[in-house]
Structure formats: C-alpha cells, structure tokens
Image (tube, rainbow, N blue to C red; front, side, top):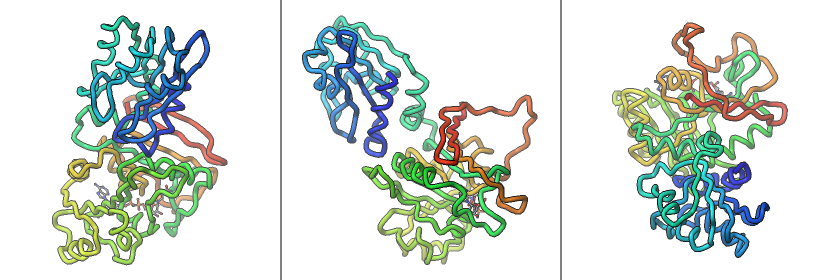
Amino acid sequence: MARALDLGWRGWGRVHPNPLVGATVLGGGALVGEGWHAEYGDRHAEPIALRDAGARARGGTLVVTLEPCGHRGKQPPCTDAIVQAGIRRVVAALADPNPLAAGGAERLRAAGIEVEIGLLGQPAADQNAAFLHRHRNSGRPFVAVKLATTLDGRIADAAGRSRWISGEAAQEYVHWLRAGFDAVGVGGRTARTDDPQLTVRGVVEPRVEPRRVVFDAAADLDPGLTLVRTARRVPTILVTSPSAPAARVEHLAECGVTILPATTLSDGLRSLQGIGIESLLVEGGGRLIGALLGQDLADRYYWVQSPLWLGERGVAAIVGLPSEPIDRAPRWRVVERRALGEDTLLVLDRD
Ligand SMILES: NC(=O)c1ccc[n+]([C@@H]2O[C@H](COP(=O)([O-])OP(=O)(O)OC[C@H]3O[C@@H](n4cnc5c(N)ncnc54)[C@H](OP(=O)(O)O)[C@@H]3O)[C@@H](O)[C@H]2O)c1
C-alpha cells in the first residue's frame, strides 16, 4: 500500500478534481504489477496495474489507495476489470466518498472477491484531503495555507522583504505544490509588497493552471502589478468589499481581473467555490493567514521553517489569532515532516 500511495502522487497536478490513485498487484508473494491514475478522465489505476501484471494477476491481490469504482463514468467500471483478471482479494485504503462511484466493494464481494478497506487509511486520506473535503459539502473550498518563517516567527524583514527566507529546495517544492491546487491566493499587502507571479514554474506542468486570487477589501491594486498586468493570460480574481471604491474596481475589471464582492472572508471563500475553485493554497501574508486560522477556515498548514532570524521589527508570521488557554488550545496533527535543503517542511492538518 505504501508503494501504491507513492505511485498515486504521480498524478499530482494532472488528475484533480479526480482523486490521486495508485495500485499494485501481488501474485505468488511478489509485486507483479503497478499503475496510477495519470490524467484526468483517462484510465484508472486498477486496470493499468492489472494490465501490467497480465496473467500473473490471476488468483492474486490488488492493493489500491481508493475503493475501486463500480460505475461507468468517463471510464468503464474498475470492478469489471478486477473480476475479469481473476483477482482473489482486494485491499483498499479508503472507501469512495463519491456517491456516484461508491458500491465497488459490494460488487466485488458479490462476485466472490474478498475485500478489505482501511489499510493505511490515514495517509491515504491525507493524500486526497481536497477530494475528501469536496465530498463533505462544507460550503467552501479546501483551504491550505503556506508560509516560510524564520526561527523567531517572522515572514519578512523590517522593510517588508521576504525574498528569500527559504532556500531553493523549498521554492521548488512550492511550485510542485501549487500545481495540485485550483487556485493560489495572497493578501493585498503581499500582492503590493512582493509583486508575485503566483504561477507554476516547476517540474509538474498542471493540467489547468491554478487561478490566482487576491484578498483586498479596498481593491487597492496598482494596474502595474504583475497579477493585474497578466490577468488576461492567467485568470486573476479579486475578493473585495462590496463598498470598495467603484472606480478602482471598474479599472481592475477592465484589466481582466474577475471581481468577487464579499463582506466576510467566509463569504469570499463560498463565492470562490461558486466559480469552481474547490482547493485554494493561500501563500500569505500573516494577516490573511491569521484571519483564516482564527476563523477556522484553514484545513492544512504547509510550514517551511528556515534557519535564520530577523528580529522584532520583522513582519510577524501569523497576526490576529484569538488567545487560547494552553490546556484548551487546539493542536494540529502532523501529516508530514521532511527536510527541504537547509529548511524543514511541516505539513499539519486541523483535525
Ligand atoms: N515568508 C513568507 O512565506 C511570506 C509569504 C507571503 C508574504 N510575506 C510577506 O508578508 C508581508 C505581508 O503580510 P501582511 O501580514 O502585512 O499582509 P497580507 O496578509 O498579505 O495582507 C493582508 C491583506 O489581506 C486582506 N484581507 C482580506 N480579508 C481579510 C480578513 N478577513 N482579515 C485580514 N485580512 C484580510 C487585507 O485587506 P483589507 O485589510 O483591505 O481587508 C490585506 O490587504 C510582506 O512583507 C510579504 O513580503 C511573506
């Protein structure tokens, strides 16, 4: 299953809103086939792994990160391929939350195949967090926040400069990360101070370039900013107050920026989901991230920790959180911990 999870990652940036899925086939005690869902709408992991195994699949075990589908969508039901291949046992990490695709396990059992669900269920759920979130109908996209912070919890120096707190490996990782989201967002101050591109320039070419989102109540974006200048090439959305100065809003709309008026952050997120954004990566700054965390609107935190300090006049990493007594403060769950060059990545989920 660990191998199947690794294979599943190969679809990152290419398959969403479908889930990431990897599969392995075991025959005669050996690994005889591998497959993964590589492209949205294309073949599923299971028939690819079964084809890879060929006749060696007969009597064997199929290990897959998501319950095989029992319906005809863009592809024929995987359950048919499994029955035809002569598989004796199926081990899946997660039950399929999609009501259209679910029921695969029952179909397999009806065909006399032994089915087990739950092996490495937590890592599989972590891998497909945005997909699972979508099926929970929370009324907003899956929201992940990402920050690179110093030893002393700063995200920029006293002059507002944040380039670069983290090293090259961390920056490459962020480009990989962006590729798997529907949209990448920042607060207005970050848009003005950093003038970021928020595009994907890494190893994975996303099937659909993530849209870009700026949260700025006053619609105070200079038309010369990269996000505005390139809005016709890479869609850019401004979430702003309904009372933002009309002239500014009109001018930004003329530049190709999509305007989403919203009175609260939560309304803004709901409106983003309304235009098809099911997953959003917010890359700062500290005020916007503080507001998302404080209002319970963030599901995951990608935290890059870098070995330098910037001092008290540096920009604080997270601003505006309410005070919590230590014995009742919510603790986040560690999903992943790894070195990125000199930096450390911690991925945390709100449980
Ligand atoms: N190290 C890193 O990873 C990193 C990443 C990004 C940025 N940075 C640095 O961080 C600095 C900017 O951070 P910042 O904390 O000053 O600002 P920020 O979070 O980028 O911007 C705050 C913006 O969010 C908007 N916003 C919209 N709704 C909000 C809400 N409900 N609550 C709070 N804000 C809301 C605010 O607009 P209104 O107030 O008009 O509503 C404001 O424009 C820059 O120096 C940048 O270089 C570092």
